[in-house]
Image (cartoon, rainbow, N blue to C red):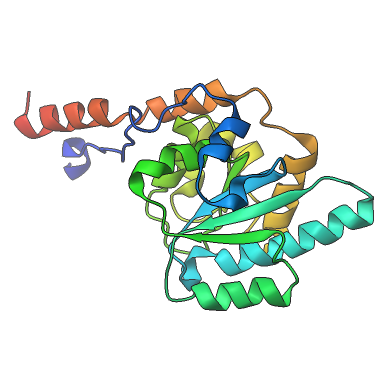
Length: 223
């Protein structure tokens, strides 16, 4: 049986690099150079190459729906979305945000240096992964969890498996703008992730880089 000779080696995250700083979130935000972070608003963050399959368009539309839902419900909660990364559709997405009158809610940061990534994740109240198709592993989920920041993500490819024990709170119903807006609203108003930073960190540690590479080395060496 071929299956008897197979071993699955999962992806991994550098939990040494991606670790909590121990600083207050407001301090972390003020230390970031982009003024979009200099706010007390609830901050959703995403880091995606801006192509169609990554779902940024749906996420921007979700922000418009969320704003409408909050206004209809009389909630005074303020939020913003900060989009990291570049790509061929950035201008299209900027125009979409402008057309939906979201310039005071959706901010485009562009490329984020690798050295700055841990603090960007930690500065956010919640990371959003709005993928529409072909998500191979979802490393950004682990990077966010490793610093203690919660994630909401679409049920695409390997994401549900990776989300694992947090499916009920972290996984959206589907990939549409309304599905994403629904989860964003629940996170914003109901705060299901409050006080759970250590839970997310522990889950990320299951995919620790050093441990995974050590296990892979033993597998390759056959010992």
